[in-house]
Image (cartoon, rainbow, N blue to C red; front, side):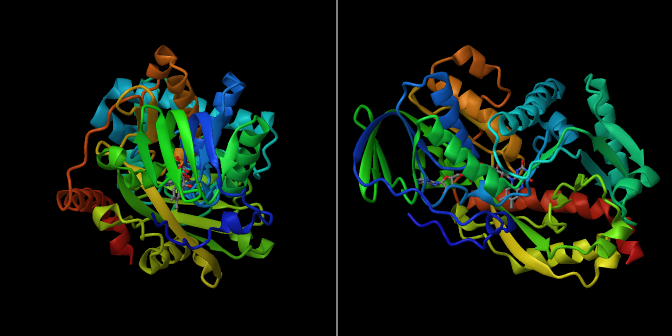
Length: 445
Ligand SMILES: Cc1cc2nc3c(=O)[nH]c(=O)nc-3n(C[C@H](O)[C@H](O)[C@H](O)COP(=O)(O)OP(=O)(O)OC[C@H]3O[C@@H](n4cnc5c(N)ncnc54)[C@H](O)[C@@H]3O)c2cc1C
């Protein structure tokens, strides 16, 4: 099994020097083995030990914790699901959106509580979320989103006109915005590493540089790693976009790649024309969104835009000079006064997507193995909430777990070459919609 070297994220670069735990070098027996040391795996370990301190729990991570998306994401812990609430309502219905938003609002609040309760050092702030419109069709789209949420009884969405939006973050491209107070921003790499310590404090074992190479069931699970084996009664797949490495999960999700850049720290005079005193997290209203924020040291991170897909879900799509160039150009388009700002970090990573663009978790085969995948680019808060559901599934508390709107068996992706064709067609359709909503920008150019 080979997981590629990935360009290093700003967040990992800003962590303290790191010493990974030693790999597994013996044969061990546990009650629950968790594959994957990202948010999902580590928080599931913590939740299990909190619920049943006597359980023997081990997390097996192929590289270092946070190697996956958890150490590389945009850092937005938000309530958004799929391609937004209106698109999700079209795909899954209004009742699903009602349940999904309720779940996601709790996800953001619980993550915030976890960080505070357990004193996880991760540069957390709770500055609120702006979803900005950069064209009139996007403004219309966002207003529909506000109307939908109000009609479902959720009031925490406020339409801001251009002046009010620009009073917060001043870009000449911001024509209006939805303001949602509920958003947590973190340094995700610091968070995931703090969660490793937390899992260990509760008594879980965490092995790093320990890829699971083979799994058999005889009748307990038997996991082979390069230097040791694990016998486990129960198994948690917390492998997100890397789930493709396991035949059992292969058709449940596909892998997409998304990219980010970060600027050098901005001097106060460079920041002045933009305002941004509230340090809000900002996302636009495209299908293939852009998202941007200010870091504690006043860099701007910008992510999203072009999405990569690879044949047979190969995991070698972490770098894309074309996507990085797009992000850099978009930064200067939004904030013309920053034309000479230097970009210091460029990175990317995989996300997991199901055929209906909504997350899925549940049992795999019999009730001894569970999985969670398909968070797309919205897994920061969601993975933490999902960890509680995985705990319930492992402990056999099915009634609680079934409350989760994402407890479902995802539709299966077709085999190659149909899968890559379907993924490219889906991406093409999303791009086409964005292109048509951006006509007035092209007239400006
Ligand atoms: C660039 C980028 C930006 C994003 N921005 C946002 C955002 O702003 N907000 C948001 O909500 N979401 C965002 N996401 C998505 C979010 O980061 C993920 O949904 C979330 O981190 C998933 O966490 P996880 O623990 O499930 O998976 P991961 O963090 O990917 O962890 C899976 C782990 O499994 C390990 N693994 C895989 N195979 C094996 C094996 N065989 N043996 C042992 N270990 C294995 C991997 O090494 C990896 O560490 C973004 C994603 C990317 C890539």
